Image (cartoon, rainbow, N blue to C red; front, side):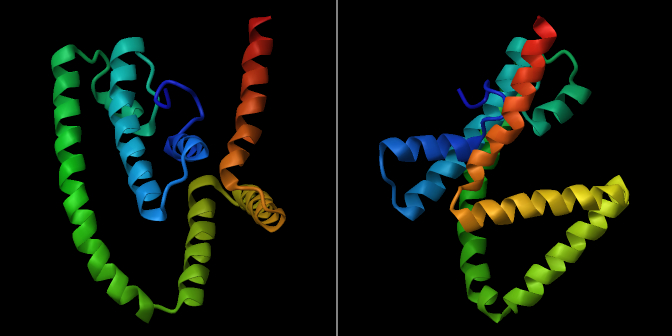
Length: 171
């Protein structure tokens, strides 16, 4: 259902699943990865079935394959499954390497560098006014963390106005 519902992603699906059954951290991460992979693959099925892309990858594929046929869909699904299988082993291999090296990195410097990179990227891609939006979004994220609201629930702040807008357009 995640692939067909707007605004619902793998994080929301994994959180909903964990509400019914408590998972260990390792199992939850495995569930999150599996749901992400299935969601990505099913976004191609949605592109084929309803001619509407449900993910960024499907939008990109739809630009090159405007009339996705069954043979192309099967090829995309096959390649996606092979890539998912290979990525499991690559992830485990690189996780061991990075987990040993991550302790040598200055975490404060890394965070500061990422913040500066995002600000510069925001200015370059969207102009100086985007920094105000970045600051507002960051403030909302910080406040929700301080008062104990999970960021996954913030999707509702985006979905509700979109739903209302679409319903008002129907009337």
